[in-house]
Image (cartoon, rainbow, N blue to C red; front, side, top):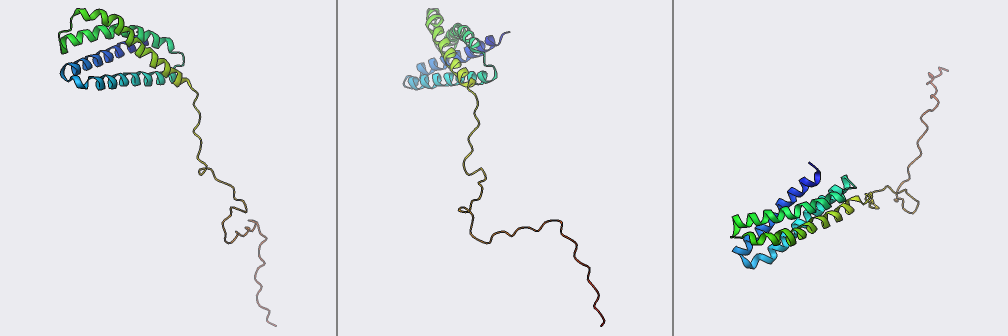
Amino acid sequence: MRSWVWRALVLAVLHAAAQTAVAAIRVHNPPATPLTQTLTLGFLVALVLAWGTVDGRRRPACAMTWFYTGLLAGPIAGLLGVLAQSTLVDATGLESLGTAMTGGAAFTALLIAGPALLGTLLGRRPQTPAPQPPDSAPQPQTPATQSPGPTPQPQAPATQPPAPAAQPPDPA
């Protein structure tokens, strides 16, 4: 199977689960709905953006892969979301399927393709080495920056002529 099919299936399941969780919170705790929707949307966008960035670093020519992923994941997420809501949350019926397969699918496709394409652009950027802080490089000592104190004595060359042998004292 192509890589975009696997991505589409994984992201469709995640989007359907998020849609079902938001619907459950909307039914059981209506005041928390706006915060839940915002956090869920942010999580899904951040996930796809990170996945697209990693993918852009490994495979620079993957823009069409993400486009196909969004096109396939949208309708699948809409169908799975309606099925999950009807069985787990409330009595959502077939009347919601049309909206989920058109507007919901288009929104999901844009939520996948947009951040993923932005992530691939970020992933393609050339890596620049991190600049070193100025204290980490050894600085040459100039007369103005030398520390006060005794100056080091020059070392004698390693090859010195041998010392004359000690003469015994003269008896005279």
